Image 1 (cartoon, rainbow, N blue to C red):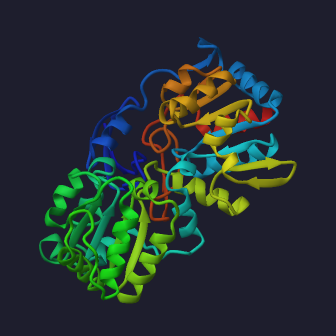
Image 2 (image 1 turned 120 degrees about the horizontal axis):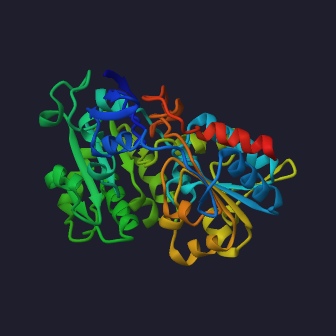
Length: 415
């Protein structure tokens, strides 16, 4: 029986204090992790690796050969996913995309991509989770519910922990604020500092808040009287170290990021505010950073004979909608489940290769399915935390499942 500390790759927090008990390469007990992390780590290490072609078992070499054949015969293949893959795997995927003139995208093209790109380009001020734990006195959760999506965030990094400069914690030295369309679990924790707004109401609320920050009397916004909005504005003005955690709820509501840019500009004239995207997968941030370093773009690119094209037409949504891709390599993602049915159904018309550590709706409808090791549990590497900090990890257990990195290398060699 072994007990060691490990990194959990269950979400973008990449918690590094997880204690695991394993025996015969099976994870038996997981301590410190949240319910998401426990389920993520316990699912690994069970059963033999699967290699399927047309849902029939084959050996690894046959699956690799079939995958290479599909990509070789495609005029415009799509590579999609990689949000749960290591940095090392992502870099190989970028090289593979170059080699086969592929369209390359991830979920950030319809989620937090514009915000992540602005942060990478230093257009917005950000900080680390460690800074927040040690210094933050005002924490805003906007369009996000970490109590469900990132269960340890409030306890480990933001509201509840004792920090080097915040020894009295949430009882006296921290204020948590939630702005959302519903009273989420996080909103309940925020108590009187929950501001409920209707869907698509964020821009108007930002305008009211900017008025209050600028010393003007804000208009009543969604039943929040001017007095309450001024109280909120004064709390934000008085922040010595504030942070806004931005979720998809806010991004989906805004037509563009200009209202957010304006709010951050005014906040930082009055106080000291930072912004962090509520990235869900353990290495979406890594994909965006790695692709940006290579191409200058965070997603939605098309490689073509040494050149790079970029635009919404090269996103997974628009590519499938317009039927411009004729094959797909899906890595660690389930587009048939997460995309709208009217768009996802077009993926059923092309050959799909699914490389994933678990069976998904997409893998069940794939021409080729290659079952891989779980990054961070059965395979080592590194990933970028939601705040941009690089975290390296070793495997928790040994496995006979090949890593995504090994599989992509073998596909490259077979082309």
